[in-house]
Image 1: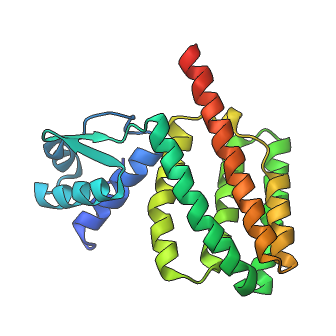
Image 2: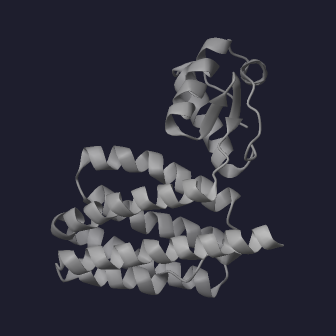
Image 3: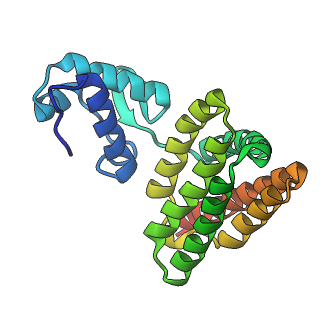
Length: 219
């Protein structure tokens, strides 16, 4: 876990470090987060840590019950809810991006698909997840809708958290063909098809995720 740098706002640094630690698995799902211990670890007062924890509770990565702060433990319904929100927002994003992506962004989108396909062939799941996220980020940023981009930051963090903590990387379904169909619809300026392909892509991701959870539950 990184240390804070005195020249920058301490609560924002603490927020970024703790958030990264949650997403990367330094903190486990359901683990208790203790303000005093974090303050001691970072060598700062409890004020910045308290504010960072408040921000992470607002993001939904931490939960608070009866005074205890814990790392988010998503239920099956939580996962469905999160993916439904993602689907709705990304449907809007891809519709807007279809008409606003620059030529350079479209080239980057296509290149990202090639990288995703190569990562899958190599069974490099770390890169596969990275390129998958880059593909979706390009579309979200390409929407040019600042409010949507802000909303997606919260959803994206939860999706990354679920993927890293709940679903083994090896269980990620092949996505490059789905990305290809989304990209082709964007390149052809077909909004409705782009939205349908995006919805289908996220539906398949949710179906795969729930299938893995069901198998794990029965083991």
